[in-house]
Image 1 (cartoon, rainbow, N blue to C red):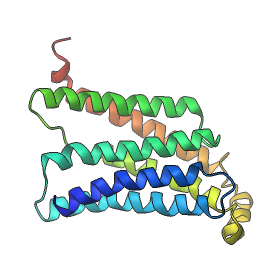
Image 2 (tube, rainbow, N blue to C red; image 1 turned 45 degrees about the vertical axis):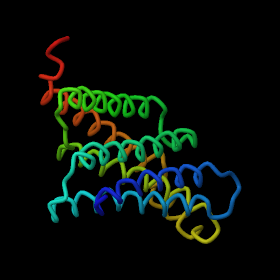
Image 3 (spheres, one colour; image 1 turned 180 degrees about the vertical axis):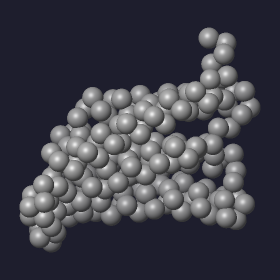
Image 4 (tube, one colour; image 1 turned 90 degrees about the horizontal axis):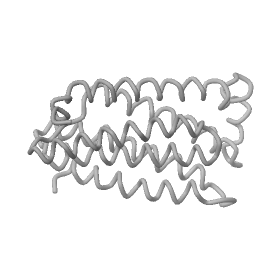
Length: 194
């Protein structure tokens, strides 16, 4: 298994660690740990694609598993932030529906012997989703003792979940829908036998 594919698998493993950390209640530095693990997983997302293209290590495994690992990481982040009441549940349902729809298209393509790689618009969508989740994780981590100095900054500049957080939520939603519509439109031939 080449290095980009190892990074993809590592992202899946880091997702489970992230979920465990953010699910812990009352454990010191768990939110900070979740922020750090999620950030590391997000870095592997950018790094694996860069290394695969730079070193000509693009594989069918990478084309299929890289976007899938991204979806698992993003879905985990959004679901957990919904549980913490930082993102409206209906937004997360729409985002998850788009992710399942694109995964379904990939499965249809796979049945036809075609591997659908991620598109640029999908990469922008993933980027804004990562920024949104990191923003909320930073907000949560700022409540912990050693980062508490950051918490007043969120309030002083109206950067709490109710302001900038909502802008990021809507940005994630709009770009997610836009990329989903684009993906279906470009691959509508797969749906021609409906």
